[in-house]
Image (cartoon, helix red, strand yellow):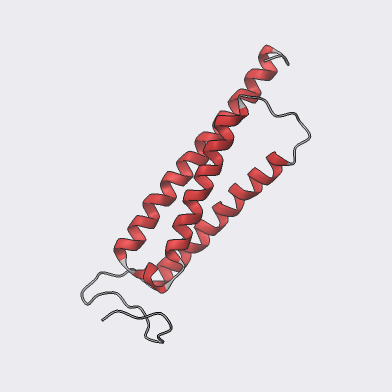
Length: 124
């Protein structure tokens, strides 16, 4: 049975679907939320920096931004009650890890280019 728009019938997982514990999912939501806030804070700080942007900042910004979007997508999957279903939880975890990897790669890229710029001169 499916719920219709405007219906008060709750959406529930199919009978026999494996679920994760609500407490475990809540801890995961907290961890995801914290890293999403760090990602958004990093982007905000970077965007408001007085330093001039360079062409080599683009790959790092794209990676951090895309990583943040994957992290937010994962968090959005876990927030509804359906996030307790193991298949949805596992999908959110994979999306989160992709987002975390992209964000990490973007930060490492940005720092690496800044270090290279410092070593090899301001004109790079």
